[in-house]
Length: 209
Image (cartoon, rainbow, N blue to C red):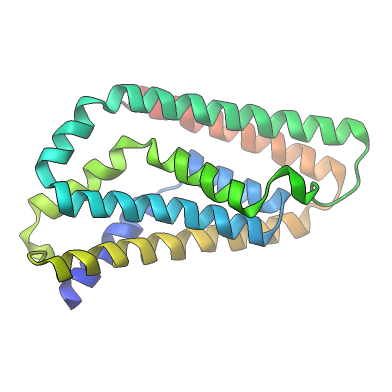
């Protein structure tokens, strides 16, 4: 069981730590809303990672082949969703700046915790590389020690916990960023920079595919 837990933790950190468009959006979302909203979004990302880890231990190589066969369309759908997110951040930042809004954060109705969870869950689920990654670990590495249902469950829990810990760490960074940037100009700059970074990482996702 310990080996399965360690394997799950390492797998979860392995897929979560590399900074991409989703991580950038998570930090920006937290900075522009609240730790509660950011925390819900972080759990959305971790839930997607945990679900893909579960699918990997259940489906194995067969699931990997299925996902790989539709990876192209999924990648384009994911890219389209991220582009919409990036444009939304830029438009929101510009609109708030022009409106002369001095509030440090937008109104709670603009992004609830539930909406943040669902949004990040959906965006993360559109990444086909995640399930392929987990499947490769489960199928190709006997060192993971995953043979029984109990070991599989421990592996999935480990992957979820590791991903959640890292995403919540990003949320903490977003919280600090939000406190530091209380002025309209600061929020405008970070909004536009975040939008540009997400677009750049999305382009890299497409070119790398």
